[in-house]
Every structure is written in C-alpha cells, then in structure tokens.
Length: 498
Image (cartoon, rainbow, N blue to C red; front, side):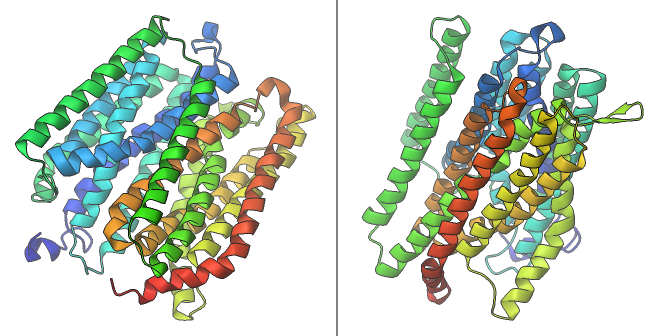
C-alpha cells in the first residue's frame, strides 16, 4: 500500500475505499439477516399455507446447520482468496453466488429451497472473511484510524441488518415469504453493483493472492475445489431423490461433534506442537477459556432466529390497532441497541484503561455471558405468562434483546481483540480461524437446543429458558473464578515485545 493511499482522507477522514467496502457489506448483511429472520418461520409454516411444514426440531436443526456452515466456510473462503484469486475477486464472486442463492429461494418451489441455502452458504464463505480483512489493508500497520474504520464498518453491518429486517419482515407479512427472499436478492444485487462501480477506490487492495501458489499448486487446488463441489452437488441430488437419508437433527449433532473435534485438535496441535514457550502456553490457556465463553454465548444468542423468533410470532401481541408487527422486526432491536450503545462501550473501555482498572479479557467475556443469560430470565417470566394463555407484550422480547446486546458488546469485540493479543504471533492468522469455529459450534448447538421449544407445548418453555440461564451463568461464574489466574497470564501479552 502506498503512502498516498494511507494518507487518503476523502471519506470522513478515511480512505474512500472504506465507503466501497462498508457499502458492500451493508447490502450483503441486509440480504443475510433479512432472509435469516424468516428461515425458521417459513420452514415450520404449514404446507397448505405455503411453508415447508417441518417440525420445530427439524427446522431449528437446519437453521443451526445453516448458520454454523456460514461461519465454517469462511475458513476455506479465506484460503482461496489468500492463495488463488485475491480478496477482490473473492468478494465479487461470493456476492454473486449469494444473489443466485436468494433468487433460488424466491422461486415458489419446495424442491429448490435447500439448494438456495447451499448457494448462500458458499457465497458467504467467500465474501464475509475477505471483505473484513480488506478493511484493515486500507491502513498502515500503525495507522491510528484503523479502530475507527472498523467502527464505521460495523455500523454499516447494523444498518444493513436493520434494512433487511424492515424490508423482508414487512414483505413476509404483506406479500409472502418468497417476495421477502426476492428482496434479499435485490439487496445483494445493489451491493454488487455499487462494489463494481467503485472498485477503483480499492485499487491495489487484495487484488492478488497474498501468498500465491505455484502453477502446479494452483492446478491441484482447483482440482480439489471442483471435486468438492461435484461431491456436494452429487450428495444434494442423492438427498433430494431420497437415495440417501438425511435427518437434520442427527446430522446437526454429528457436525457439532466434528467441528468441536477439529477445534480441539487444532488448538491442541498449536499448544503442544507449536514449540511455544511457557508464557505463550499460559496465554493460550487464557484464550481457551475465552473460546469456551464464546461458544456458550453464541449458543444462547443465536436463539434469536429460532426459539425467540417463534415466540415472537406465536405468543407476542403484535397488533397495534390494525397494523401487524412483522415477527422479524423484533430482531432489529439488537442492531438498534448496538448502534446506540457502541459509542458508550468504546468510551467506557478507554476511560477504565486510563484509570488502570480495565477488567481482563476473561472477566469481560464472563460478564458478557452472564448478562446474556439474564435475558433468558426475562423470557422465563414471559413464557409463564404465555403458558397461562395470554399474549405477552412486545417489551418482553425487546428487554431480552437489550440484555443480549449488552452481553454481546461485553464479549464479541473483546474476544476478537483477545485472539489478536493472546495468540502466539506466528500463529495469529491460524488462531483467528480456529476462533471462528466457536461461532459455528455455538450456532449448531443453538439450533439443536431450539428444537425443544415446541410451540404446541408452551408449558415446557419456562423450564427450557431456565436451563439456558443456569448453564450459561454456571460457565460464567467458573470463568470469573479462573480469571483470577488467567488475568495474570493475559498481562504477559502487554509485555511481550514480539
């Protein structure tokens, strides 16, 4: 990156390329969250009403597999960009595949629905990790604007999700699900157009592979990629034709075990086989606890698109006069609260840091997990009201999403920062990839657990919400106790000159 590019301040003091990337990500997130908010609702809708007529357990397992796969496929997506095609092409091709996926979802045909989901997963795996990495590449290694740039980028994500929830949620209620899926395709299309028209703004940024393979290596890589795609297509056809059985609940459990095994094996490989010194191993120990907190957090947080989504549709009073609040709109509370609260949290951490009383990473993550769990205490009382035959007021869900958002701001950005600080420098990129697996594990576990929330058995819901609360609080308390030790390990990172 040239000095002139680093000194570019044509977009609110930042390089103009930030506008291109944040705008593209905004529309991609519009399409992702707009569709995700409707996924479980469409799958459990009766066939005669235009849905798939699946059970809550099956639909929730599919939802968990979908959200988990989105994060998991970011690992090969990042590798393809770094070794084969560069980030710029990965973002464009990924966005195009996502748009195709949403177009397939918009077709009123049950047989193509899951094919559309596969396209969205593959496209997001290409786009999502690389566009975020490109934001950092706009700046020099010591450019003080980097953190501010990611704040603007994160704002774009939340603005996009608000648009997605608003537009797709409204269309679902007033026009039908397939119109909403079509709107997601339009949103991604808009993002691709503006990306292509403003591509000159990021000239020289990840336009080539970072570590390109040799011609022979590229040939082998493309053969493997094509082979995997053919195998995936073949498996899809076999499942569609009934030649291969597919039970989403069993598959979700098996995938959760597989991803957890990959996480443990890779983490163990770096810990035991990475030739780490004592300080590095202690920091890795602290990071392992943070990974546990992250997994448990997302297992609870991702109830938003499944069990909480169904509660909003079936047991929440959504009529204001003659206007019906779309169920998807409740999920927009998270984005609204993030936009409102993010500046406060940024100021709070800076103020505590100046006074030398800022909590350790593990303490912050433990507190975030406990606060998230408190949101399910709210749902415990809401479910009790619903079990008595009442439609509960919307503020119960809004309060839950508020607490989940506060927990997210305590944990999510802090955990990412912890990975970059606590990982051994020579394994920092690999450890970020390993950490992303916590999102996958949490999402799949969330889908499996959400399957227990049967709307026909509302009397069981209060107990299920308490189960999530007890488990999350217990893990949070254990982490708080262990943080007295790991906090000292984390401080070693501040003294490490590497």
